[in-house]
Length: 122
Length: 367
Image (cartoon, rainbow over all chains, first blue to last red; front, side, top):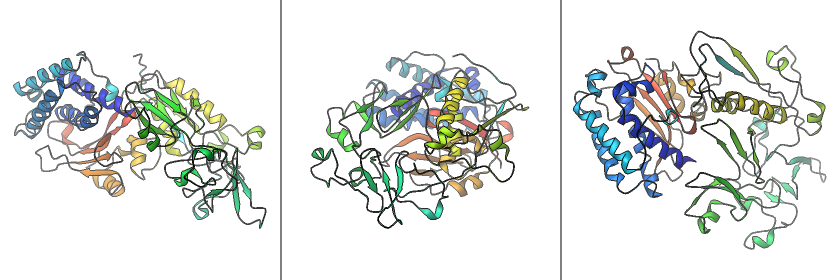
């Protein structure tokens, strides 16, 4: 059902963010802006979060991290470098690595394993 | 997951011939002006047989399993056998006087499917006849309302389950929008001649069918399809699936259930008329400009338009999100136009479509 799919989308977006850039780019066709799509995948899943929280599907411990991730992702999207930096340089920056670490920690809080995201939910 | 890669594959779904088309208001009254008359009398609700009014020969009523129903009055002609359970309402009512959210195809009682929120399992509940019933029941926290019928596609196996209005589950999907009847075209039409002719058995029960035609050809572009995209293509074509086409659907389902989508499938030939067409067949957006799509999709009810405000570029793109029935949350259906940045593919724009259970797909756009 929809809620199950929303949850899987959130997990897939977290797993995607956790990967290194070479792995991340494999999930997208060549004609898209990969850095934007990585972050946008999470942002789209984040919009579904209220419905998941309402049904107690997300553990309380994971919620602050999801909010932090949302803030950091937004800061990246609005950063002055975002439109100008090359994809590889941008996605290997200190800020992106911080986002990766936070994403892994969130998956841990949600008792979800790291690994390859399910392509059906990205 | 087991994957098969096709390097040069395109699948085309050709529309069958529409010999009869019937439109209704919610009560089942025919909207004759926009339909196309035919000989099939099993029309409203799928199995209600249309009968001429014996009194004056001008009007009509529908014969259901238990009672006859008058769509002009919005009332059954006979007393409801289940009336004891509905003391607050006339025993001649149709669908609790609310045909928008309820249905009564048999003339007996309308019950619903509900889904377990955790497991996703969908079950038929004898006690639930509406969303309100579920809200009052002891399952209100663990289940959500699905409706009189449902269609579910298993993301992993590609198998489809359809729950009908009688509580039965089927492994194929009926497509209820348009009823087709067999009628030989006056000119040669490959769609007709390539399809299986209807048998006399089908004609005798009023479902004379022309099966949709699938053509597989080889193309230079890399493409592949999923079972669900095929089913959606069939939905797009608005074809009624009867005995033959159900078999066809099952064959397609099992044929494609091991094939994984590896790229952008080419458009299935259906026209872009609204947001439902995009969700059913996202590849319709391929090569389209922003203004072309906006002109068709703007002001779609239940959808919210916006821009990709989080990017800093002057052209902020365009998004369209579906809202839930309360208008408080988005669903996972959306359409997005990315205007392009210098760092990818010569800065060309592209479309992204999330069609829920069919996943997210991207297509190149035109400037």
